[in-house]
Length: 253
Image 1 (cartoon, rainbow, N blue to C red):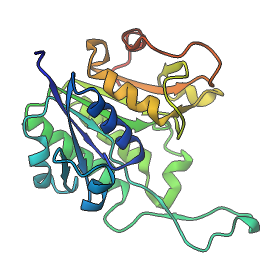
Image 2: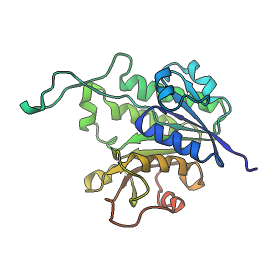
Image 3: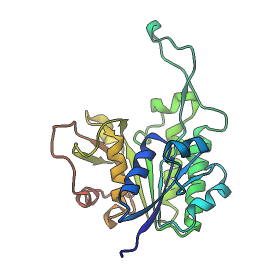
Image 4: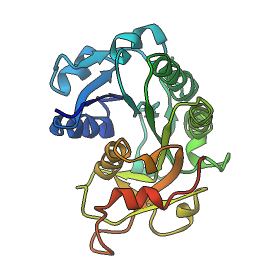
C-alpha cells in the first residue's frame, strides 16, 4: 500500500470547494479526503460524512480537529459579497453590494486564511494550496470597491503571509470562475495579471479544482504562485500533462 496523503479542503461547501472535495474522495487510492465547512447545513449539503468538520476560520481553536494529522491543506474559503435588495436591472445603474457582519474580507480572507496557515503549520502540514484571484496587483480593481471590502488587497496579504511561512506552497490566482465542465480546455498560466489584458481570462471551477489536486502530486508545483485561465473550448489542446504545466511557472510570488 502506498502511503495515502491526508488532505483537508476548507470552504468545502463552496462551489469550487465542493468539486475539490469530490475529486479527492474519488481518488481514494491516492488521498484521504477531509472537508471543513462553516455550518451543519453545509455539511449535510456535501454528504454529511464523518470526514467533514464544522469550524469557524476566524476562530483558530475550532480548526484544530480538522487539521490534526493532515499532510496537505487546500484553502478555498472566501468572503462573499451580497447584493443589496431592491436592485431593478430594468432601471439601469449598478447593484450595490455589502458583506455580512463579521464576514468582511479582512476577517475571512486575511484573518481566516492566516489562522488556517498557522494551525496547519503547527500541525506539521507539508504543503498548502491557496486559491486566490487575479487582479491583486491593481489596488483600484473594481472588485475592491464591492461593499468597500478591499477583497483583493486582503487576499494578497494572506498570499504573502503564506509565501513567507516556510511551508511549501502553491498559490493559484484564478481568473473569472465559470460553472462549466472541466478537462476540455487548454489551461494557461501567467503572472502579474498579464492574462487580464487578454481575451483568455476565465477558467472553469472544475479546472481550478483539478489544478488544486494535481498540485499535490508534483514537486514542480511547490513554492510557486501563478495566474490561471484557459483558452475557449475547442481552441488548442485540453491540458493533461500537469507536470509540464507547473514546470512553465517560474514565479515564487
